[in-house]
Image (cartoon, rainbow, N blue to C red):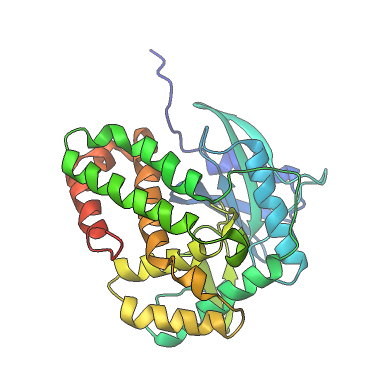
Length: 319
């Protein structure tokens, strides 16, 4: 009998033969599956260099949202930012649509981010990352595209996320009450500050520190899948959130902020919303997991998962 797939792993040899040949890449040798995350990542190996090949998960992004991402990375690359920029097809386009067992998926190929992941065991690593984050924000000024994707605002990051996770809290009414109360406080805090007093523009959307590699002092940013236009304090709060998860906030956050401020100013009105957006980031992450449970596994909708996430949330100053 034939059974449909919910989430397939595509064959690297098939991608090499049918997809890579459409791109302006010389002497491709093999396409090796590397990692399943929000999307699937392959390492494309050539005789003299490597590339990254990404296969977006079915129904995750609209084509226009991916085109927005490609336009943003190209803009940054043209401005001199160290980013894993997209590789063009022979026809000048960047995105290839394929028919996977579960339905339509999209493929892009980018330059490879050389070097090692930053582990933030040293203070200087957080300083460097803060500097590179600020430079990315600086270089993105002036970016504009006709392509559209959701803005990284409170409606998308918080309100839409609460709608996704709400059904899974049916047996946790007290925890849901905490989320509702804190979300109300978050909305009030954000709305109390005039938008023209906050730094708004292009955001990477996932500045937790794992989407960069460092080689010879150069930090290269990759994986812009969560990017969008929004309040840039969300990018900073994402690093702060990550430092809290690692229990390295006292060491990592001041160093990151020092590095950021050495390149770009961040106002006190923005920083006053830091804890608010740490909370919002965590709610958004829960919705990412729970909303994709059919692919990630329904362990992310379990009571153990909820208890673990709420333990972190209840420690936040905003709660």
